[in-house]
Length: 477
Image 1 (spheres, one colour):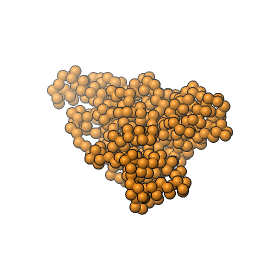
Image 2 (cartoon, rainbow, N blue to C red; image 1 turned 90 degrees about the vertical axis):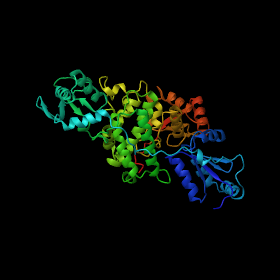
Image 3 (cartoon, one colour; image 1 turned 60 degrees about the vertical axis):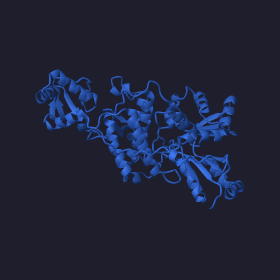
Image 4 (cartoon, one colour; image 1 turned 60 degrees about the horizontal axis):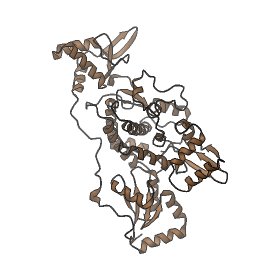
């Protein structure tokens, strides 16, 4: 279809609703200009100014603001209104007040994440020498066989003999191996001892973590930097294998892709990442991104859970080694991001006070994470990734977008009935002490519009019923 005017779609990478809208336009043979807000971040202010909205997609037919994906679908069904707008596109060029197409030269360049090199960590070289020394072997203590371990005193003897250093310096080197997460004391003591204590290198642990095995030789990276690289790569992978209608993910396609192989290599860097020194925002962004990436990695490598028992096992056993310690999906969500609160079906808090991961947990739970974490099921919020810069605004936008859709909230005014996502029932304590406080929290996080007005009317009238939607655990594949 030849158009004198133009259709503009503001979008972000990996946005299911954006994919759906663009697919609808293609099916109706309407060409469009896609303005990616990641590549052209300077367009965000213009978008907000023109629409009053912060969510995507936002669609324009010439200067007419159609709205988001739901608005586009409604427009297509209204033949008279749709034909009028289409006729305007066919006969008229875009007026000056229509969205301005950004100069391609101003786009943020794509970065190739995954293929990188680094100077070998000096202690990685020491670990390599240790493996060749013959010190690592099986040791029996109290009838228990500890495989692939070495003795602290023997390590010190070896350093003194081969490096010509004092024993105190050799002990400091042993401590450095622990501090940089190359190895650990079998009894979890944090201090390296010139004694008969046993130690094991991290890549000799019998771990089922999806990033276990041979360690990276690069030095430990700050959590913010590594999290940003993983964020970019997993978003690129997700977007490439998201269906045109934005509803399904091709996990088999991901498994065979070169980008996924890059991603698996990059997860090795998590083993020794420096998470202890991260700021709160860095921790939140890091663990949200790693959680979402681990769900995809597990669906590809392990397979999706298909019943209640498998789901319980999936969230409690699928894990990564992060900063020298194993974190399951439950540990990331309830241990770190919810400030060590018990999750659904949990009898105890994830971390005891003696657990080294206890000190990584947030001091207060972050309620917005529930609209940022994905589980691979159809009722979960659609995947997004988060960066430390502007994190709070990103999280609020995720909550706003989810609650403004029918997966998050529906209202029947004639029945005075409010139906909520089951997420708000499972984790009610994160949003308020009772249902009214939860609804007030929702009200403060809804964009202006009919849904917000209806909810305010019901709350002010104090006459309403609250129910919860059935959660769809069907896989989005």
